[in-house]
Length: 155
Image (cartoon, one colour):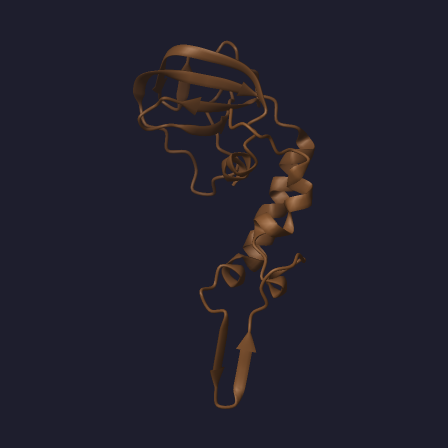
């Protein structure tokens, strides 16, 4: 979800940019001397591994992927962006994940209204709110909080 939100606001919190040849083997990226323990980084130009990850000495992690990281071994010429993601933004992404876990299925439902046996239901649309009763998506619900971090350009 972290990468999805970053893409949505067009902000990856880039601190440094390293272009060149890289290899991924055994769950590690090389060279990696510019990354600090626990630092997030964004890979582009890879065939199999583009995305946002967290560097750890014992292997790359993706904190926001419940399926775990399945990095594929490869060598590529691309760019690795060292990120400086604020803890307050990470906390906001966690709130968004919690909201999606609670309301995501209802908010994404294709049914706006239904009626049967004298019962009718209409899902409201528009407006902001804490849940799907406002017909909101996570982008709508968290718009004002995300605007603080939003950028006009992508990278």
